[in-house]
Each structure stands twice: as C-alpha cells, then as structure tokens.
Amino acid sequence: MSKQVPTLSSLVEGPGFGWLDHLAAPLQRRVYAVFRKGEAGRVAKQWLNGVPFRHRVHPALVAVPIGAWTTAAVLDALDGFSADDKYRAAADAAILLGLVGAVPTVAAGLSDWVDTAGHQQRVGMAHALVNSTAIALYGTSLALRAGGKRTAGRALGWLAFGTVSLGGALGGDLVYNLGIGVSFLLYPKPPDRFVDILASDALVEGVPLVVEDGRVPVLLLRHGGQVYAVEAWCPHVGGPLGDGTFEGLTVVCPWHGSCFRLDDGRPLNGPASAPLRTFEVQERDGRISVRPSDEGKTWPPAPAPPRAQPAGTAG
Ligand code: FES
Image 1 (cartoon, protein in one colour):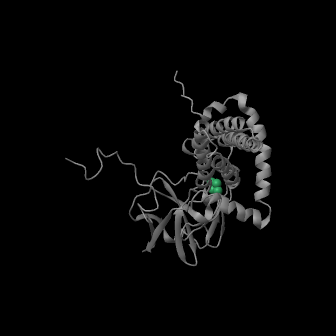
Image 2: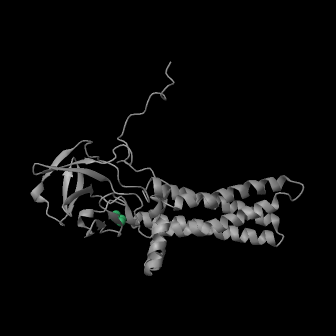
C-alpha cells in the first residue's frame, strides 16, 4: 500500500483540526456579508482582490509587514550586542510599520479567502490564526518596549517573527500547493491555428454555446451580428462560464460571481483577477473557425523540457 507524504498544510487535515472549520464557517459568512454591503463593499472587494490591476494584491502587500519585521529582528539582534541604545528606536519603528502594513494585508487576504471552501478554507483559517497570533505578539512586544521592558519585548519580537514565518509557510502552501489565487488558465491548450468548430447557422444571436477546440471548451456568443469567443473555464477556479448569466457582452460566472467582458476577456468583477482567454473568430462560407488570441504573450507557454544550459554559454 502506498502512502502520501504529508505537506505542511496536510498537517491540519486530520479530524483533530475540525475546530478550524467551526471557526471558519461563521467568520466567512460575516466577511462575506461585509463585502456584500452595498456598492462600497463590492468596490472594496474588487480592489482587495486586485481586479483593477489584473494581479492579486495580498502577496504584494505582504512584503511590507514581512520586510519590516525582518528588519526589526535584525535590529533587535544588533541591539542585544550593542553597548548603547542606538538600534532601539529603529527596531520599534520597524515593528510599528509592520503592524500598520498588516491592516490592508489582512483585508486583502480575507477578500481572497472568503471565496474558498473545503481544505483551502481550513488551511486559510489556520494561516489567519497563526498570523493573528503574530500580530498580537508584536503589539505586546511594542507595549513592553514602551514600558521599558526591553529584554522581554525583544524576546517576544523574536517569538512573533518565528510565528509569522510559520504563517508565511502556510500561505505559500495555500498558493503553490492548494492553488488559491493562481490562474486556472492552464492546460490543455487549444491548437495555435484556426480550427473549424461550428456551422454559422448553429449560433443564434444572443444564445451562448460551448463547443470544444482540442480538449478546450470555447464559449461562443453572437452579439450584434458579430461572434465572440472565449475559453469557457473561469480563471478563478475553473467555473463553467457556459452556465453563467449573460448580459450584453458580459458573462457572470455561476460559481463565485466574477464578471467578464467577452470581447477582450477583461474581468469587471472579482474574485477573478486574471482575464479570460479570448479567441480570434473567422466566419466564412457558413462555418465558424477560432484561433487563440495573443498566443505566447498572455497565455502560459506550452510545457518544454529544461535546456541543458542557458543560451549563449555553449562551448
Ligand atoms: S470560478 Fe470563482 S468566480 Fe468563477
């Protein structure tokens, strides 16, 4: 019998960690309610998901607290060896900067986590709890320093640094192993040439249709007499856009409500931040053909074996 080697996040898979689900479910409901509170909540979620940037915001914001707290750990170490107090003000300021930077970072993380379920949801809860503990430890450390208890403040700062490192490792697992926030526009890929996929009269104005190109489902819509074609998988986590809601030239994903334009694939509403794949369309002699747009530019490259050595270093 074979056995799966555990990953860091699989440690919280067991029934002993079921309490994480009991915490996660009501928290997710509350966060969801906040993001659904009128137009302001919806717009806040767009920005926190990174929809206007076509890029996730949480990993970019994380650099502020992690960088500041790493700096504080180094300065505290130098302070431990120093005969005077020249490193102290900078160390305290770095901790404070990290705490301030943690506020939007937490908000962006919650906006990504709120659309998860199952193991992603549980590991996300563990990630949030560990990092919340680190934030509380840093806050206490700062208070101890302000009260003149420098040695205890430093010790707590290092404990917080270890804690936030564990939280970061869980965050890495969430992205690299569990796929939160990654684009689901991967493989299989359609052929990089025009492929005849449908008879023109099979596509009625305003009625979407999904057909296969290679093993890739292509969503077709005739709108104003023109045919638009996009990949039918939602880039968020692969929702079936053919079952979505259509309005004019837009489609809303049936799974988590991301909204996309069908002419250029642009996301108008998250949680998806990556655009849809689009296809060039040719309609000739009663047939419709499609070819991927911008092949090799906005799409991941096809898998290729590694080069033996970097180009230009032969000999
Ligand atoms: S799969 Fe989540 S919005 Fe489409």
